[in-house]
Amino acid sequence: MNPTSFDPTLVDFAKGDGLVPVVVQDAATARVLMLGYMNREALAATLANGWVTFWSRAKQRLWTKGESSGHTLGLVSVALDCDADTLLVLAQPNGPTCHRGCDSCFDPGELPLMSELARLDSVIAQRLRDRPEGSYTTKLAESGIRRVAQKVGEEGVEAALAAVAQDEDALVSEAADLIYHLGVALRLRDRSFDDVLRLLRERHR
Image (cartoon, rainbow, N blue to C red; front, side, top):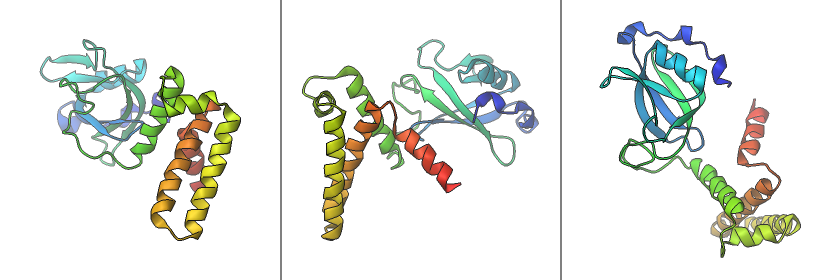
């Protein structure tokens, strides 16, 4: 959704004496980053400038995340729960969210499995951008899109053969290789797994 299309008048601020809790998730990995609170002014500021802004109960003022550290939260979307008294914000973190230097204010735990696809895509994008020496992704990219496409085909055939041979472990391993090489091909064509997932969502609808 376009964050500017969110209707702030739907939020019931009265239940919490002018404040509502806000759960912030990483838009790419779905990891819960932090919990904060917003009043009407904080929500309005967030929607207006695109940077997640809270009402600081300690400082008793509006507080834009990262205003001192630079570790901001770029707004992606806002959703309201069924009771209209809690917000879910999807954001793009620019650096660690927690003051301890951690990605999340919550203790580390296993990320949702689907987030591994986002992590892989991010690593591939970084390798293609920086081209670090000794990186297989660098070597693969420099071999050209035709070679990358060939690798996608090879890995697809190997995955199919493993399926026919009923070798479940090999099938999983070859499928992982196929996904990686497909990710490189997508990025070399200025696409990403996000584009694939959006299309899958549309087909599901």
